Length: 227
Image 1: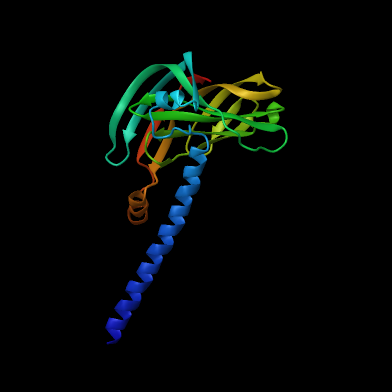
Image 2: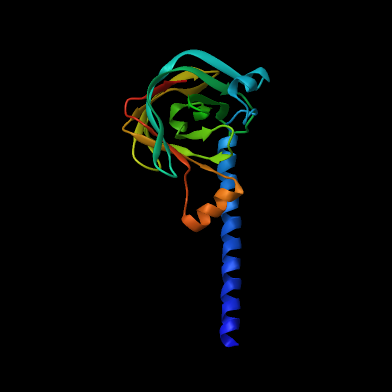
């Protein structure tokens, strides 16, 4: 009888632990998802050109840079796509996001790399360059719900260091509407961007198998983007 009661207690403890982990991770996933979707087009889940047609986006054509990349399925470590490509088009979303005095949110920007995968940048402006002390980028795969946030901290006026993992970027600024914004990002050293699906099944998989990424993209040294 005591063994049976002990087993029941252990089962109850495991159930409570699972539920607590589930809700904590689900909340974390929503926060992470919120960071990315704050800068994604309102037409998320549609093809970019459909969102443009709906009036959400303004796409910019021209030479916007060059990227050398390797896109990997993190579940099986299979390379889905790799190569070098010129960036011929970027997509821009404008929306109102409140900022502290001296700072303004201009837009989220992104470009396509392969089969719905996009790399994006959250574009803020500051009254002086010193106040622009960091910025976020992300990897996403439309139309999935994902979490991705790659943060860069300023180390000097034109250099930002990746917070998670190795690598730095060099930036160039331009004046815009009385603010300074980042106009160009150049990658110094190979850098890894990761994204993770935030659906309930993936939440459970993370709890049991410590799974924290579905795809990753290695951006090679020398790649650059002119926004």
